[in-house]
Image 1 (cartoon, protein in one colour):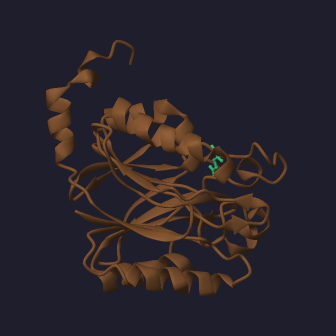
Image 2 (tube, rainbow, N blue to C red):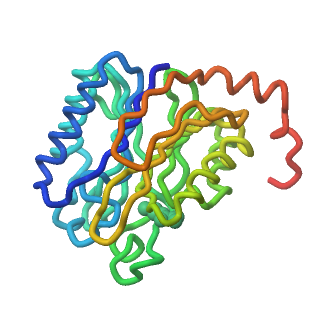
Length: 260
Ligand SMILES: NC(=O)CCC(=O)C(=O)O
């Protein structure tokens, strides 16, 4: 499965429409890929808190529509990363997977909201959490969705495994000062939950926050299939989701769980 991770650097000085147009053009350049993955909150910046309320859109708003058009033109599944979704008077950090037909195939609202550096402006004060884990029945097998700070909460990934997940699509806006945690925890989730993990981070600077890049793909045995630099980059990796079952059969550690 040809997979392209678009490790975007969002330029918050550009108008939102220009950021979306640029991302959609990059998606269209991935013709031939089966799956294209973008980072968390690239339209508004994962740390661009001040712009979120104004930029929030419903699920059928212009950002998702533009990415759906790009998915259709590319003929690929596109995990468009996440955007700030407005649903009535609530805002969510919502990930969206689009099919090659441009239809919404899956959505996931981030469960663990990050606000350690900005208790008054961070995600917990601006957003509402999602209601729980999501496993999407993808053409290549059951696929869990997770977003950034979720990575620090292993119980979410066990819940995804219990719901049948074999592959994990993780999108992030993970900062550079803690990038060693990102690289370590992505590998840990792949090995402990025996999942193929496709993990797409953002790059570049958003205000005072430098995002760390280093997107990576790790299989269920823990082997690294590709890793990006810290800067904006398209990382192309061929992955084999079917190999996860072989790992679980040869080394059935998940069967030996005692606490559930
Ligand atoms: N956007 C995020 O969820 C950031 C998470 C983070 O910085 C961390 O867990 O460290």
